Image 1 (cartoon, rainbow, N blue to C red):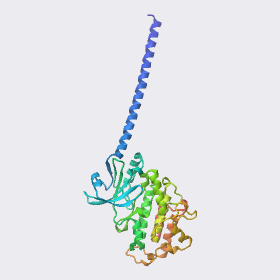
Image 2 (tube, rainbow, N blue to C red; image 1 turned 180 degrees about the vertical axis):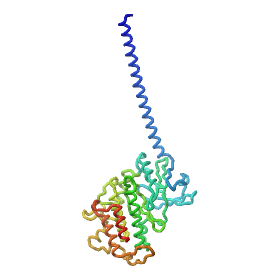
Image 3 (cartoon, rainbow, N blue to C red; image 1 turned 120 degrees about the horizontal axis):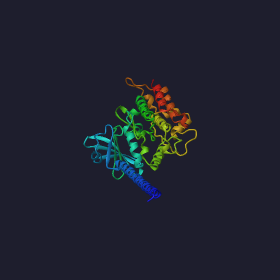
Length: 359
């Protein structure tokens, strides 16, 4: 075999080896890609199973909760909505009463969106916010939020059920400041503002000495768009929806402030802010019906309960009531309910104004 033939043979063998190596390399890459894809799919499936499995996740002050204790607890229905049911439940092992919120599976958001929101809500702690103690995800898609139970009920009951304390200025002022502080913590206490989205007097619970606790904040993030829209429609019919708010996903700090303003006006009137025409708000004035009429007709005295001035006696360290304070309180509420979001104060400004009223 001459030199030329030897070189040709070497070149042929080298080309064949290169081709084989190249084919093996392609095969290995495809195999690795499939393996990686399977690992990703397994990871995603595992994450879903963490949320979907029969599991209880607990947070601060809820470490003693157990699945059996929660599911076996005798409960009393204390509230219903299109998206869930509220239960007052007695946990046998700890002999404690808790508030259980059951969310209907058909109304909840996608699994992958749930875990992040629940972890966020479970970390929020403030002396004027209802804490999330635990979260249970059932095998059939049911979701259960566990909160403390507050024996004094909600603010709507307090204002409208002829409780004489609801006409005492020091108590009204104290609750108002507490609500504003809780809302301010949501809006400014984190890297990004946490929007309540459904602030109303029914979602303010009262503890000892009438300390207010804001509940249901960011609950709309756990709901699907259909259920969120139904929540918004209810808010509109009850008089708490800001006029510019069309979809729940567009809720922001200023729409929360509007709802706060309506609550402040509830304190003064003792009346329910039902809006008979929630879908056709006045272009120049966006308050619920009875409030709108009273203001437009300059009947400001109709906007506060006469007992506010009659119950003028106060204890040590309490703030006495005056017509001037009531008028400033009314003007603050009206500023919060301004038709234009840009004219509404932010939470810090509300707190500053309340402090000024109290001095």
